[in-house]
Length: 599
Image (cartoon, rainbow, N blue to C red; front, side, top):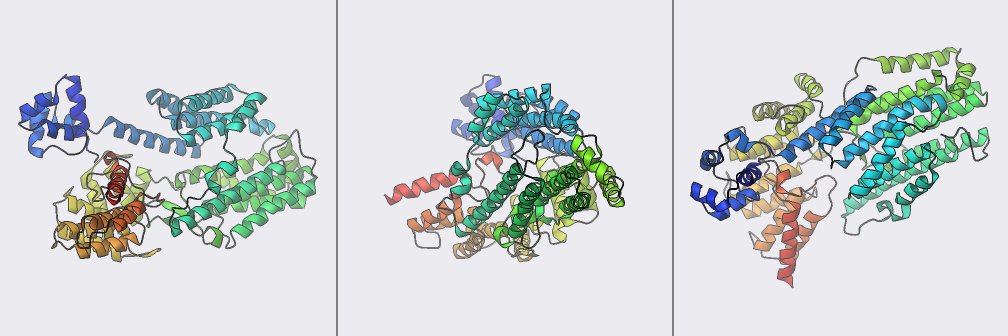
């Protein structure tokens, strides 16, 4: 649970016009102690809690109540999951109602405003694109454009601003507002100024490889999308003068390029791009009266749709998050992992729905249907797609779906046991419940789930939900480090935690050499908390010769961007049972301190 006692004390004191000195005198503590509570640098002793609640005239539950900021974060997370689930089942009108209410409740949550704008565009496209082949001016589109303009005016987050500019561009294009189309086009970053072509030199070797491969995938997708634009994928009333054969040749290059990029055939989420290419080729063949190719392309589009849904998913054991992801083995992108699992059901459903458009009264689809509609091959494809979209709710891939996780966990799946424990710990989708969290962590740990073993060890070390027991924590962490995973043996969290025990002499004799050994093992996984701990050992000369240059090196490694092990910005982001309590502010302060000492 995220403790908010200090924030609540500060709020209550302000509401009652009480000074820190008055509260300190009442409790028999120093004013400095009260100040530390309110800034989150320390918590009041448990024996003082009744006195504090009495001073303010509130209950202990009110004093300990979770912060409004944390509550809002949880509610927004739950709302986003609901939005994704509604999109998966076509409940777009319900989404708009939910989002209209949410943006009033959270006026500074610009991401929610953009989600509302996007939902308005979706509603309009479902109505207009099927009928005419393009997005048309509508009240929804006008509202979406206005929302994007508001985000661009008030929001300071560059990522959200760029997203707003892109959505505004599409909206103004539908509204045929050429001046604003050009204005939004100018606000979208061009490739030469993007981070795709700017690789920071301070990244580690592994980080550089991961970033380069991510850029390869992004550039590959950009190549595919621009080729399809060249082939007039969306154009119905204008074109670049390419013949049917030339357009097919351009789209075939997209397919050939992906075959080159994914030489092992694990296309992952790129199956959705392949489906678009093949679906377009089927439409073009229908326009050209080429029945045989139209059927063949349509069959390939359906094959890609099915492959998208059925692609293998793996649990993310390297980051111990319990999330599922799509992995790649092809050499150019073999470090890439596509998470986005919460959208899989939605996207797959939409792929089927879009292909079913060939049975709807759009002019080009009507031509295709007239050409191949009586064939058994066409009827078989439509039947397959209809069966998929008509299935009662397929298995959810939403990692925060409590009911689904509960069913899977009760069925014996340790990954879902771990996810369920995380939901209970965070209070997402269900009320926070430490006892239930411990129960599911123990069940997952009994099945040797390495993340559950580590997290359960942290609860034993902190005495949260269980009796404090450093020996049990050590046993669990050593077990977590020994469990084989698809990525090999070794858990960076557990290794760092073991080092923490030896450095502090907690349940074991204090042994800085042994602490350093475990921290170094964790550093092999580029784990920032272990790197910070190593920096401390060398800065303070604990078990080693004092070496400020080496300390600075470890601190700087801990400060480097880390895709897999993110460092929290503030103490408020750290769970009260987490032994890894280093924040970005702490690391930056250490770097500044050592740099000053070296001058």
